[in-house]
Length: 337
Image (cartoon, helix red, strand yellow):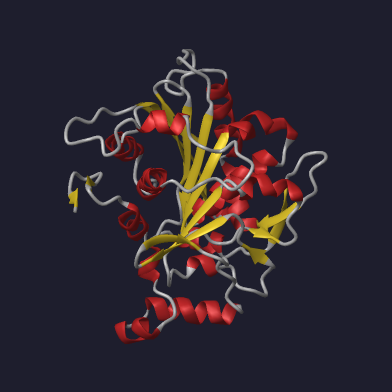
């Protein structure tokens, strides 16, 4: 297990992209009875974190500073076991005041064959639910990666709950953790969902669960199986999934490899912007259709044009570009007209 820590970065003009971001996050929604209301600025901020989670710790800290997240600490927790297809990386960003923490999981690494093989482990396993919580079956490969860094992530969040600094564990910050946001792209989105379900389904972790404001995912595959116990409802109402049309990953795993389904609110990109979908993306019909769709999406240009799916639509930069607000600068300092 590798744990790295650095202090928050400071960005001068023309940044930050979103002034007063932390005030909004600390006061964010999440305690009402119905589904959380999707917030465009939050969607952009968490997409930035999810996109740059494929980079190193310094890059994540820098980009989050540029969007307006004034951090006390940025922590990277990682675990790699090649033989077991474990490639688990989580980033935690603690606000300077201590009230807000963002937990973001890295998705499937494009050039890592073992990572893709781990994603293909579509058999289901029981999520470790606590006493009084009926069991839930989840994707084995996704769950293995989430659990690989679970206890270290939990310890970091417990420290934040006590008002401790994640940069200097022997020091304190002004406030205890009040608002937790969880995010991820692709596999990282599935891990974000499974983390939220794991804390919600355990009496031991209810203090952490009580701080959860929202889970935002991007191009997330399905991670949970039918039937869904009632205790998953609280996570479902806080989950906001983003799907770009023709992205093949949200339709995976295919039917026949388990009764997987999406939960939470689904927002799809349309010509007029992001709109809530009436029905969620459904599974591809079979493993053969999944293979054919992905091969077509990756094949020659003529085949790609006729394919139902496009692998390029799944790229994190596609999601980030689609979520950047117009009339602002980007995290690179370019103007979004």
